[in-house]
Each structure stands twice: as C-alpha cells, then as structure tokens.
Amino acid sequence: MPRDMRYPAYYTKRIGRRLQEAAVMDPRVRLQQVLAGQRFPAERWELIVVADLYGADALTKAELHALPAVRFRSLADVLHAVERGYRDALDREQRQRSA
Image 1: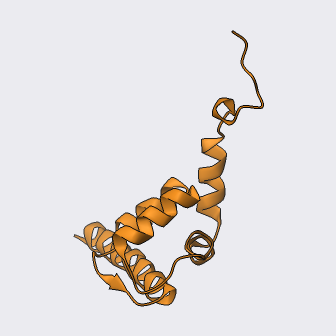
Image 2: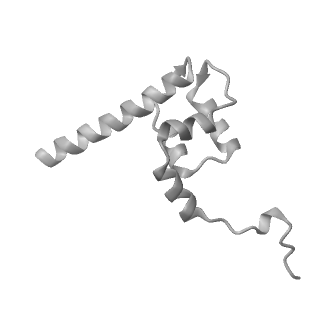
C-alpha cells in the first residue's frame, strides 16, 4: 500500500535540525514561546504538560524537567529558575575541573 504523503503521520521529522536550531535560540525566547498560553501560578508538572502539547524540543523539555518541583508565580520566575540552573551547572563544572 503506497503512503499518502498528505497524512501527517508519514511526514519525516528533522530532529537534528530542530535540536540545532533550539540550541542556537535564546533560552528565554524558547521558553516564552512554549509557555505563552500558560496561566500562572503554575506547578512544574503543568509547565511540562504545556510544553508537550506545544511540541517543544528536547532541550526545552529537559530544562523544564530540571526545574524544582515548586509553584511558579509567573513566567519570570520560570526564566529565573532556568538561568539559576545554568549558573549552578557552570559552577559545578568549574569546581570539578579545579579539583
């Protein structure tokens, strides 16, 4: 049976390209796009579900999974928590290299 290319399940996915574009894009912009329709305050699990429904890339989902399991009052709180996670990871890496 030949494939009907108009059927969405048969579209080829360009995963590598999407990940590359996601890595280049500013994390704040990515999260703002993904969480644009989210109402706050929101729990971490709600943010993850919204990202899944949006079709977020793996990098954005990983950032949301790395957030602490708390209730976020606003999108700004989410952005600050992600940036704090980046800083903590950088500090840990520098400590490991110096040890």
